[in-house]
Length: 231
Image (cartoon, rainbow, N blue to C red):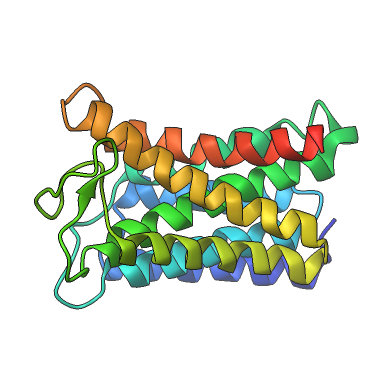
C-alpha cells in the first residue's frame, strides 16, 4: 500500500511522462494511455509497488534514450509498440490478484519480462551502431544491417547491460543473488528469443514486430518463473 505522498509522486510522474511523451512525439495518444496503465498496474498489483513502478519507469526512460540516440531517430511509437513490450509483464502481474500466495514468485516473473524487454530494446537500438555486420541468429551468416533476426556482438553486450540494469534494480530492494542472476538470464533469453522469432517468422512476414516482442518478453517471464519454481 502506498502512502498518500508516494501516490501523489507517482501520479505526478505519470502526468509529467505523458506531457513529455506528447511534446517530444515519443508516443502517440493511445501509446501514452497504455504506458500510463502499465505504470498504474505496477503500483496497484505489485507486492512491492514502488519497486515494480520503478522497473517500468527505468524501462521507458532508458528505452527512449536508446531509441532516440543521434543519427537514428524513430517515428512516434504507438500502442502496439507498448503492448509488445509490456503485455507479458502485465499478465504475470495480474495473476497476483487470484494467487496472492505466489506474489513474490510472480513478481520475479514480472521482472523477467521487463528485463527481456529492456535487453531487447538496447540490443536492437545500440546494436545498430555496430561496426561489424550483423549475423543471422539461425545460421550465423552475415546479413544487411536492420535484417530481422540479425545479431551483433555490440547488440548482445547492450542486451546484457539492459538485463543487469533491471536485475540490479531488483537486487537493491531484494538482495537475493540467485534472483539477480535469474533476471540477467531472463533478459538474455528474451532478447535472443526475439531475434530467433524475427529470423524464423518476421523476416518472412508471418509475424510482425509486436508479435516477436511479445514472444521475447514472454520468454523472459517464463524463464524466470520456471527457474524459481524448480530451483
